Amino acid sequence: MLRILISIVILTGIMCCKQKTDLRQPTLLDKTNFSKTLKGKEINLFTLKNSKGTITEITNFGGKVVSLWVADKVGNYDDIVLGYPDIDGFLTAKEKYFGALIGRYGNRIGAGKFTLDSLEYKLATNNGINHLHGGNIGYDAIIWDANQIDDQNLELYYLSKDMEEGYPGNLQIKVQYQLTNKNELKIEYWATTDAPTVVNLTHHSFFNFHGAGNGTINDHLLQINASRYTPIDDGLIPTGELASVEGTPFDFRKAIAIGALVNEENEQMTYGYGYDHNFVLDQSNEELTLAARVKEPVSGRTMEVFTNEPGLQFYGGNFLDGSIIGKKNKTYNYRSAFCLETQHFPDSPNKPDFPSTRLDPGEEYYSVCIYKFLIE
Image 1: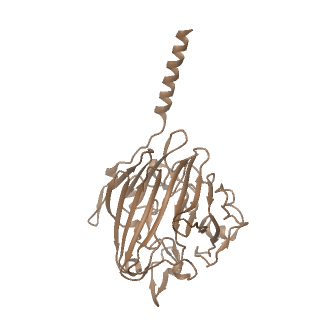
Image 2 (image 1 turned 90 degrees about the vertical axis):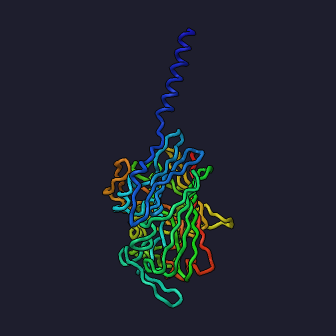
């Protein structure tokens, strides 16, 4: 009997060890695949890690978050952001915004123009008749100067010159990525200008908490702390109205599955081909507002989004069509990722009633976005 008990204990220990060994661990990308000199500037891949075991890899080409490894409730790690396995993938990408820093103006500006101090500025119309994400060569497509401070902090710098992509003023920008021991990916932006301009910087990771390329995001539970949103026209430009979410597919004040109402007959859903809308956040009196919360019930992966911005763009992966092959040869299918972009509102330079995106000499632009990861 004693011999049988000893055998059971040994076997149990072996099985426990095997189970622990079989847990998926982060598989980092080959840094040499991101090492390239382009137009006299070096592109590299930088790795940040924290005490929770979370790891992110970031390239200074477009400030893109290339991978983000987060554990589930049993300790399996998955890479939860879409992207490419090498720099050439990003340089030739059909979807060029995966994980990118966006500017000088994130989101859309109607008809590719705005007026500032009685002067009209014309921008690239790279999204139909409208301007999107800073133009033909936005901040997603430039090589940032990089300084990795330590294992948890990466600083990026860029001087966006006067009239670059049509924007006035030399804009000096600093962005800091920090992977904190609170399991937060914290993104901070600072900028100053030598002439009046408009600024709206944001971040554009495409998330899937099953793991990048592992099915739909329509089963993720989403809560957005917004009582209003900005309806759009058929070119995805806000009409100027701040509409109530009550009784619409945009009511995420209580957590519901992303796909629960996505196919409802609704003019706004038709215009956006699903969710591609700016939400007007119910801001608190605190420095930071809890903007949104997302949970994938099976893995338990949960993310809270905090910001000092007045708006949040929720995009449901409507333009992913299965034609993109990403990391690990995974196909990125329709609605297999979501974006939550903290921001000022789209087309604010042409909407005087929207919060202003103007920046003047002597002022400092500051924006912060925190993606905090939990297990539930």
